[in-house]
Image (cartoon, rainbow, N blue to C red; front, side, top):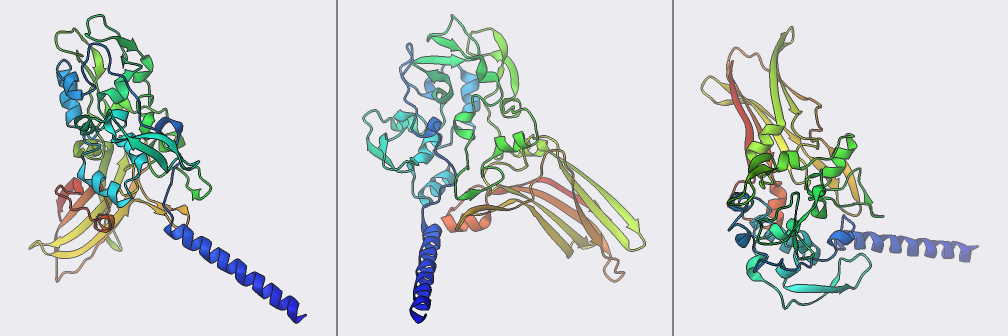
Length: 388
């Protein structure tokens, strides 16, 4: 009987040790929250179209001046050179998979992917790339990423006047077809328990039963010549506006307020509604969030009382990836924040200050990865002072 008990105890201890080792491994292993889809497992192999001397956006800009100017100021153009990306990329181990969206062309990457050591395709076999173009690398998501295929320029309209062959693809103007190479990822892994993927903008739109239409907001319609010397036609501006554009974020948010007076005192109510986006506000990386600060000031401008609220998606990353909370603003669902005004005759209130801010990055993560930002990582999108 004693031997049986000792055997059971030994088995229990071994099982506990195995479980402990498994949990330690889960806490220190490389973190992958998405599945490597075939569409971005390797960089894009492209051929320079006939009539052009390179794949450079600068050459495209010789004829497509307005489009080139718009792209040059976009985050697509800075997908590789953006200081935050560079710091975050190194912090996460400089994984090759990141390059396939930030510098997607094969000629932009110093190494070629010739195979994989693992079935998940996170550990590629690399060899030096003889066709590496350091200048092209600096262009990030350049024109050729969307507009070059099989050695031809691909666009929504055809023409006989271009110095290069043009293949018409009407699908480029439909919904998400031009965006899904990089902006749709899957989080369906055995160790991932999320309602939507971490960067799940498309899933957020689908959740609400709405049609996916990225271009309407991020590439506004315009009528103009597509290139110098050509006739005007309907097209799209290549702005790719998003969270880095304060005006874009402001346009998605409707702010209202009311002051209620009752037997228990006075209450200020702030109401925020996401009226301009079919996805959550904010969307994209979970670091992005909104804050509301309500500050009560006395007649000399000194602080009497303040409250702060954060709208953010919280995810547990280890030992398993699990949704914790999500307080972001879904489309067209008002969010109310109440602030009770104290009634103290000794310190009469002078004004109420309300600030709604958009944050690109959490301060804790900025410190953890060592990002020394030169530009603000947050900015106000609503600021108003109410005299009382």
